[in-house]
Image: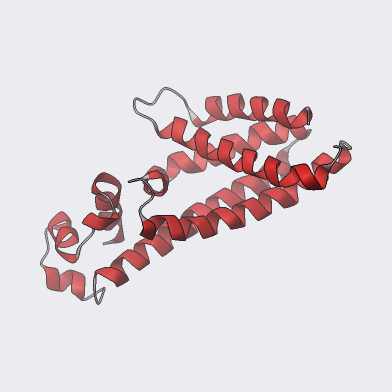
Length: 187
């Protein structure tokens, strides 16, 4: 049922997710949907909980994996973007939901919390690398650099999901990884 709700949310917006719409999408009666969810609010909460957890887990996994497998900082950036974009390709509709419908309040609030958690993890990974490079005025620059990093990840994901698809996750990850490494290596 949540997959049907996700499809509706991505194509028509979260406001279009109703018990009737999900029942119609699944070709079942509304009582079947009501047997799983008391009302529309519970259905949307379950959908947003599931999708935010999928995105958070896959994003944090990509961030952690980039550092473990890397041979040097530039390689870490490339591998990290590639891992993130592979996860994005595997969960394309989940990502489309985060970018959908001018950030409907139901979506925006849920994903803002996940974004903050990813930013904290990114900060924890970027700070030691920037300290090792003796980045001047790091404490002042770090919040700006974390926002740059997170925004570039979102831009990379949007580029991957744009139609028509012209990039593979690995190609686009290599482009973003090298570009962002250059940006970070010059600060």
